Length: 369
Ligand SMILES: [Zn+2]
Image (cartoon, rainbow, N blue to C red; front, side, top):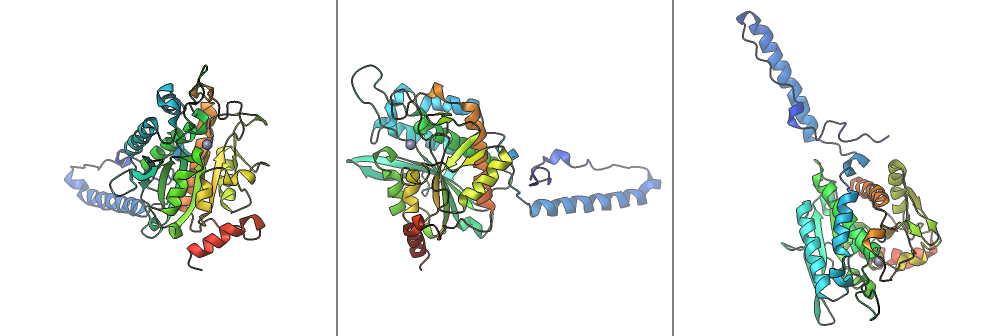
């Protein structure tokens, strides 16, 4: 249904251009002239097509999402050496530095002047949100911002007996390694999305969404121009206590805005179901999207599993993740983000839903109303 931008010719290598014809016979001089004029004409048309590219979002843009890379990255991020990435801790600092280096390697620009870090203080220690951006390609829409986020902290080390390290592989290392894959895919596009993408990894989610609330109070990009947030949580485990969750993900606050409709369309194109689950409304306030929703930004959390057997236990290990499924779901989320970043219209709160009252009020205040 949606035409791939690859099919449109944009992004083909210059090798695809026809080689210039060299005709030496004087008798064919006129013909040669005609051929050259025709070739110049063809190249000019091709050039115009390149100058005004159409960026139809396609799942093909996410073929680079690698299960193998996510596995290797999560094996590190959720290793015992990271000691559960508690807030604050030296291991949390190390995780932030690693995420920043991954953002840079992916091709993201620093989000905070020339730095990838938004520095805050928590319990007398320095803590950091990690922010990398991909500036939009549209001269006007690049001044609007779409946040793609997830928390990188977990709950640290607890107890004295047996395995005391709470590795936090699914919660929420899974979303961080998925975010890195998406950053790479978006940065590799020949034509970047129209709106500016802001990739954000938060500290302190497990301490009460502290990093996200800090951002909400100290936004790096104007909140009035922040069109939406897609926050990721627990993308890796399919063995949900409610039953297996294969080739599907859920969105919290499903009827709060029309953003889930866009994600559902992306899911349909990617062969991934997008669910409204019974816990979706109560869990709307249970992750970092709540901090942005509180200031009026249409913000949701996407998850594969809500409750899983090792939730907030020392056994939330990297080798229990379903990486193939996570790859499929990450591609679908990426396509949804791509569609949101290209859309002329922006997600809107559903004012007819009484549960959105406080968010609608915050949004109106944000818009100066
Ligand atoms: Zn979490």
